[in-house]
Image (cartoon, rainbow, N blue to C red; front, side):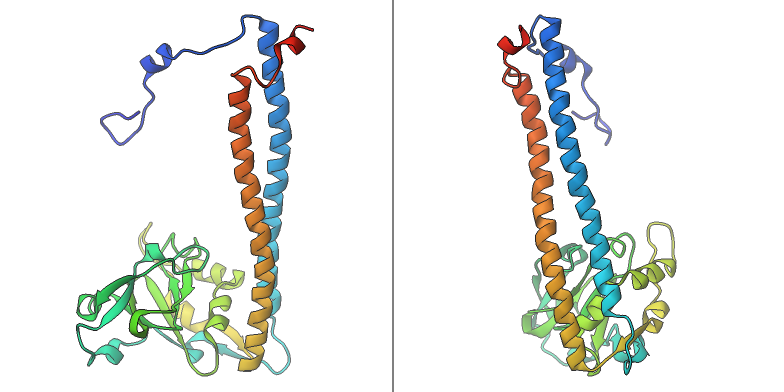
Length: 280
């Protein structure tokens, strides 16, 4: 179903030759259509309810982060640039064996759910030039549109020999001893951070990037490491519940789509409405 161009088209002659089965009685056809619409109405109501739950879960997720990072007494406020090195230098790998195996992570390997889905194995000499350097526990953030808007970010973990390289479209945050990686990760997941970062974007349309100056100067609260750890645990506990509910909702929506197709299939196989019911 395609033309000589990249635009797909429907072949009219195939439609004209397609055979369909149908009851000759118009009353039978009307009964089947009515049954389809009744089932679809019920299904649409269920889908609407499930999508409403999805929206509420997203609102709750944002509220969890907002509440977690509200400044409290005794918390110091600092710029991200004060507690993290942004895009650390490759000087650390300068004297390493060029045949050392390291991880390579292109943008496609980072999910919109904040996970590194896989990584390639490369020799240091293959990636040392022209790519972004990071290590275990560094935080990665996509800086280019639409990857940033889609939420691509992750904490580097289980890298080969503890070293990784990836696309130059990553910002790398290397926390100092005042903050833990997850404290930074969840701070850059906040709605206010994302909104400000989006407004800071510059560059050509379709190739806009988050401003490094905005990243470095964004202020976050910095409690003790023990407090950070406890708050992160609370966030993840709540997110775990949200994720389980979201997974159930996704399964429900997928089931609804399968049911929609099944309703049509049964309808045109004469199984949705029994003919004896139509004739009454």
